[in-house]
Structures are given as structure tokens and as C-alpha cells.
Length: 78
Image (cartoon, rainbow, N blue to C red):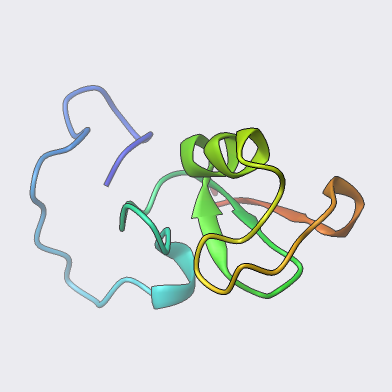
């Protein structure tokens, strides 16, 4: 988990209920406060999204291209 508090960042946590898989980044596995759903329906964290952009706007899992207009920015802070 990352992004909720400096005290919690990158520390193993035990949840009372399972974290929904759709919230976890397909690359690094983090479930942060913000994520991006690509047009291919894969979810990446903000950091991995930035890396995907640097590598040409291609999903690292299925190699499908995406454009910024097709992305869904997710915020789990509430």
C-alpha cells in the first residue's frame, strides 16, 4: 500500500477485507490512493503510468496502445 500516509508507505498490512484486485497496479502491485485505468481495462498506479507514457503509451501487459483521452483517472481517497 502506498499514498495514504508516510507511516504506512511500503509496509506490509493485513486488511480486514480483501483489497479489490482492480485497485492494484498490474506492474508493481501497489494499491495507492490514485490509479489510472487504461483503455484495455488494466489498472496502473500513477508512477507506473508515467513509465508507460515514457515508453510510448503502450500497456506493458498486453502491448495495446492507449491515448490520454481514453484513460480513467481513479481516486480512492474517500
